[in-house]
Length: 567
Ligand code: GLY
Image 1 (cartoon, helix red, strand yellow):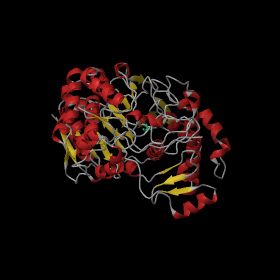
Image 2 (cartoon, helix red, strand yellow):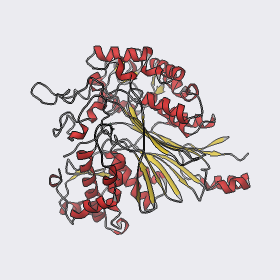
Image 3 (cartoon, helix red, strand yellow):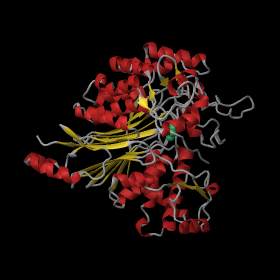
């Protein structure tokens, strides 16, 4: 039996510790090994609810991850979906096995490195962003089925049931939905307009968005698994619609899609063990590289100026490596051991001095996405899932495939349309991330576990290239003893990604005096008018038997803790 402890959880441990003692001897020896219940945090209350429903139905964290992924695909269509992809970082409690399920989209077979260039060799504006030519072959349906079949214990008919219900009965419009619809409605095709607008207008708050075709596609997946999406009528609709409306998909692109189980990236920072996303995400390598550099200083005893200066210089160098070296590991060779080694970090910090290093003195880069989503789950056996999913920019390519409810991604924009030349969003990248048939575009998505002997955090966030710096700031806070999920998701944020050579920061993230100090050191400062990111974190304090779940106040999500009941 599980009891939903707290709708917007703060501190829930005290009550539970009492309950554990009631359970008796067996529980007393177990309490350091097993969490006292479940913790789930996602970007939408209905998705968290779907996870809780699966927990109560006897599923494990992997079943819940299937339910939450599918629910987010329905109720947060601007962030992720069946037409997109993502990375699911899994931890098995029984044997400590960890794996990253790579459900990243792949370039279609007919893609080629110059496909977004005009006859003069110039990048065609928006060609990799809007419409079906911007869409890579989706990986999320394959990942959902793979996780259910390989790691779950409930059938897909049970784990997809909440998402099917939400698609059939509708989800209510929120202010975030309205804002992002306004941003992207001009690129919606006719089918997407019918689903996401009401009479061609932005719907009102509380209006219900129903997606009967998506409910049917999810039902086919529940009945047929992988083939429910990648073969049969859904695959036919996808290929026919894309290929007749400007895209280049063929049936073999779908029938040949497969997830890849990858070894996560691992590192340490002081006594914290870090497990994070492997390429084709840059997340884990860049995160570990930054932490390796920062471990050389006692950050806790520095002034804000000196602390931010060192963090920014570490970001600059690690993001430089992202631009130069990283891409799909099935296509380019990546020296992971070297890039994540302490020796290499020592070399990198060799030229950090009291002043900002101009990025031009180091080299080229690429940048940020507009949407995406993350969720974190810990079950009462100790299984964990951190998953960051995406269709890239808000509402992806804006192209919904008729009769399927599947909104396609625009993840092709995460490739470099022309090496060394900025794309439409000012992003620049290297040869390692050039377009090739079947290749996965480089990502920044960084689902992450942070663990010490006493504490565990499962976290991640959307936010394009800023994902990695947000996870870094949360990681530093965790290492410095900030063991409250709410604090981690609330942290003020600043970011540097090598190029553009500037510190971007949230309003009030840096004190006025520190801003003056950073300027004197030669840093370019770019204040943002609004906040960014949407972090979802769960924390387990092992010795105290305490569980926390928190959803970023910048978003509309929900963190829930479900406590075991004594028999
Ligand atoms: N589409 C954003 C990312 O993968 O980083």
